[in-house]
Each structure stands twice: as C-alpha cells, then as structure tokens.
Amino acid sequence: ARVVAVSDRYSLPSNSVNLLDLQTPALKGKLAMARPTAGTTGGHVAALYTVWGDAKADAFFRALHANDIKLLGGNGPVVILADADLTAAAEATASGCFANAGQICSSSERILVQSAVYDEFADRMVELARQVVIGDPRQQGVTMGRLNNLAVAETVAAPVADAKARGAQALIGGAPPPEMPSPLYFAPTGLANVSRDSLLNREETFGPVAPLIRAADDDDALAVALETRYGLVASVFT
Image 1 (cartoon, rainbow, N blue to C red):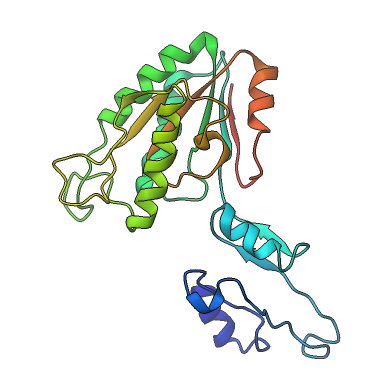
Image 2 (image 1 turned 180 degrees about the vertical axis):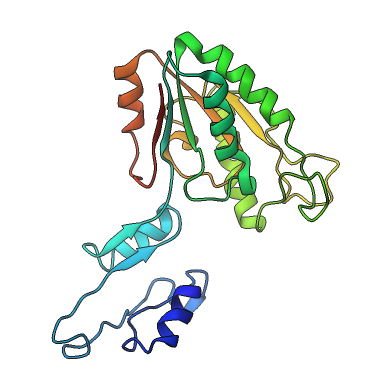
C-alpha cells in the first residue's frame, strides 16, 4: 500500500503501480492488467509484476503474464553444517523462525541439519522455543504475538499436520496453545525428521515452525536446499 501511495505522490503514469487483492471475487479467474502506453515512459514500455503470496498466487499470475512475474515468497534453506557454531546457528535460526510469529518472507523455513550435529542442534532449538513468550505483543515480556488471520492459521496448521502424517515428530508445540484466547495464536513449533516430500519442505509455511530436515553430508544438504521453486533467501552456518 505504501508503494502505491508513493507512486501517487510523485505522479507516476497511470497504472504504473497496481495493488491487487486476489481475495476480491471480481479478480479471480479474470484479470486485465493495464500497461503504460508508449510515450508515457519516454517512448519505452516497461512492465514488472511483483507478487507477494503463495504458490496459488504465483500460478494465477503466471497464467496471465508468464514472463513478467517475480515471486517474492520464501521457503529458502537454512543449512547447518557439522562444523558450525551451534549456539550462534540455533539463536539466529530460532530468531528467523519465531520473529513476528514466522510471518516474514525471509523467515527460517527449511532447516537442513547435518546428521553429525542433528540431535544437538534440535535440542538447542527446543530450548530456544521454550523461551518464547506468546501472547499480546503490547504486553511487557511477550516476545511473539498471533497470526494475522484464520486463513494464515490454516496454512500453518495444514503443513504441520502433513509433516506428522509423513513421520515427523513434534519436539515442541505443533498446535494453538489451549490457554490462548484465539486459535490465531500458534505455539512455537519444532519438528524432527521432517521428510523431503512434506509440504514444509516444498511450500512456504509463514508461521512459527522450525522443520528440521536431516542431511547426510554437504552434498546431500545442497541437494535438499535446491528442492524448491523459491529463491528469496538462503543461509549456511559453517
């Protein structure tokens, strides 16, 4: 919304910037995006469509403008190699998982841990998750608030359930805390033995979930890291 406001303030050509809500019924299934006409940009026509959203939003726009889309979704890997400083790696990774309840496109989404340090790293992540204080972020001492809306809550719960169905174990969390006043509060979650075919490895979760995927060695970690359509962010601890 701020990008659109700035474009209006500086009198950019009409339709240079469009903010579209895909939940609007009129936009679903039919969308005509106006482009600047020649002459309004000095005789050159330039168009770039930037999408914030999930795979459905990506597919929707690609069907219309296949060559103009950049997907700003994140399911980038966090790779923990055997020689990493596990204290620093766990603290940085946990911050990436639980800050803003995981509702950041560059959050720690897929955590690929080499087998030699997998159990120790998992223990450190669980301890850091226990330190998260969930509640109203306006209250002193609270470190993590709720999810934005019920739709987001559902997109967090579904891949967690999918991972469990495929053999993952919840080390901590995994559901809304029963003492919270709303299902929008989702507990800081750590999952062990997350499979490579799970939704957590394939799609953006956008919630406070730390899925730990085991990697045998450097080559295996690289192979898993590349199993994604997203390319917004990646990190390696070594």
